[in-house]
Length: 122
Image (cartoon, rainbow, N blue to C red; front, side, top):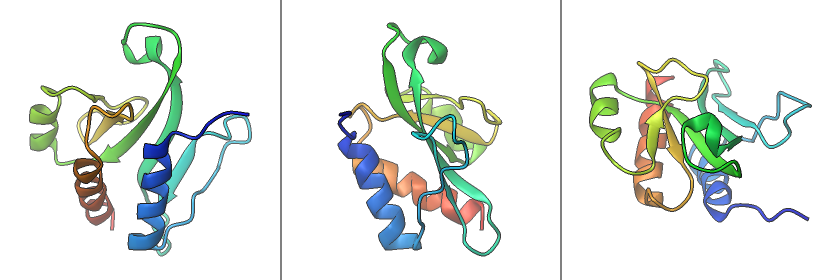
């Protein structure tokens, strides 16, 4: 049985408690991919995925959990200078950013960015 990444679990709990969002699993082939979307306009504000590190340009071929969020383009430039942030995987790299959920980015920072993404997509 696969262990659930505690950061992933915290994100889902935060989304439920703060935005009343239930996880959406739109791809049967990828049950570990979860979309977080607004209830009223159905726009995505976050995407949780499990991806091979080599697909992200990281060393190794083991899987890692990531979070894609919408972000201010000006902020993206400065975030990419820090550990745990990558250009958006499979999303518009000008408006989205990927956070590697390996502990290199604090939960507080993730939640602040999740709030911003929620507001930007509302």
